[in-house]
Image: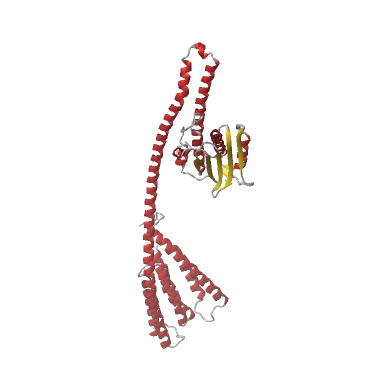
Length: 445
């Protein structure tokens, strides 16, 4: 069984035990240090050997326990608790008489076993061992086998010893019940962690499989798009190339005429213009975000805009609009293409309204025109590369706009009414939304 970190469950359990052992060590060291300070400041008047020797011996035992518990937590904890019980009983030998008050320290020692090693039976082993030592010691005192005078009457000492034994047995039963419950809870927790880890692995595997399916689907989409673009390029280039071929088939004197040469030049420029648009569409490289003031960018584009005399252009924007993180070149292409599309839509007379407004995700850029509008059946097709319904268009402007918006992580919406006009609304986030690397490459062409 493994933990969610890929480690065996036993190692995870050992880390928990070591954490409890460190807490036990800290408490014991604090108690010993305080006792050592008190004993050095006011040593007992009568003692066979200094009590602080026992404190020093206890600190040495804790040091050995600190080194041993890392390798064998259970055996090291058992040996340390039994060693500490022997030191408690040795207090009587240091003072030269029996002091039943020190026996009370055996109670927390028995409880510590179950709190450190939460395994069924371990606390019982510690309690039985300490009770055995305590019982043998008390029996030796009662039968005079140890030459230690009693500070209290023999019957009081015996009653006190029996009471301590009963308390230890009762506390052991309670501790064992809690330890069993804690052990079962830990086991269930580790099993749950393992199941969660396995579920996470399966989810990651399914995620990779889904990503592979999506990647294959994108490849098929790209192949389909390439075929569609190839057909559209062939269809669009066929007209100017056929016109050029027809013109070149004319007699030499006809080719020398200015009208024929101008016609050929117009057709060549038309083909080159379409190829330039394809190059712009395919050369949208990776994003290089930096702060962009869209209002300043719009003012710059509108100042260089050439429109017919009967076409009016109006800009609506708030007094202050915070910048967004975007690629300046991409934003220039986006605004240029939307304005060019609006100018072509209105023709020689009409109105164009450009507006900027804050949006929850960043800002909204809208370009409205009073052109003929777009039929509902064509709205879903206008972003396809080389799709156009205009005699002078090549169907690349809106495709470029959509690519720019998708690379930024935004969206573009179209509202159009036939005979009244069209509005393109672009929602741009304040920060580019991260796309998967391969998907970003697909979007960028």
